[in-house]
Length: 285
Image (tube, rainbow, N blue to C red; front, side, top):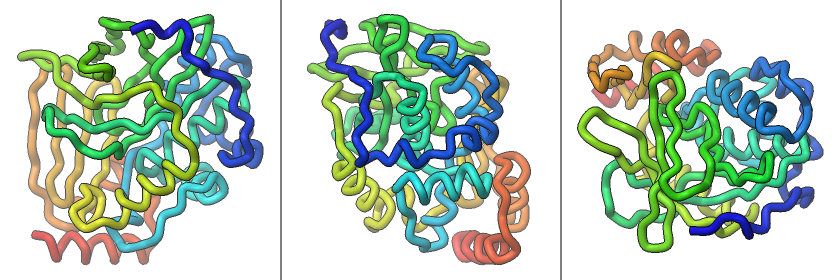
């Protein structure tokens, strides 16, 4: 699968609202102090800082609140309020920052696999970015298995960072992103390189955030990764995964789960959100 001809260009379309991003505030939020250019060094630094600083979470959706993915709403929530977001929020925010840096970026919608070959609708967002004459897959917003650094869009490309490994494979005109488990490679998602537009994301976001049966509707999902562990909270169940492949599951009381949201995942919750989230979790025990 040849990537040399991919038409990645600097996307300054007003539909993304990138010019409205407070870039200085965003960079302060993620702790980025590297070069402000279109080098691979800058891309890697931005990607790692975003992954480390912005948690994957659907607290608002779980509490029945309307979630908007326009850039003004997203930066109020993530940049100004210090919250996280789910993929449409966090990766589109990252894309806006890349636009401001001048990187050529293509926004994609991809099909989640999570170890299954079942064909699902395109419910996750990832990015293609050109830097140093190479196209890279960027995705700091996947959650527990998010890339730490971008991965070159080349068949069989592998990357190991901090002891965690990912690779790209090909299947039936799709790319597959996989990560390494002790027993074998594990499919994360499948994608094509077709650009998507704001209206496509609005439709996918509406389905993901409102449709009964969506993995983000009616349950709490919070995820983050460090260089040492990966954390996944689903309602009252906390899964911790280690580089060795070992996994530990803890069942939490509602108060414990809310405390984990604030501490392990670092989400600032108001007193009202704390109460509402505790009640939400208590109803699902």
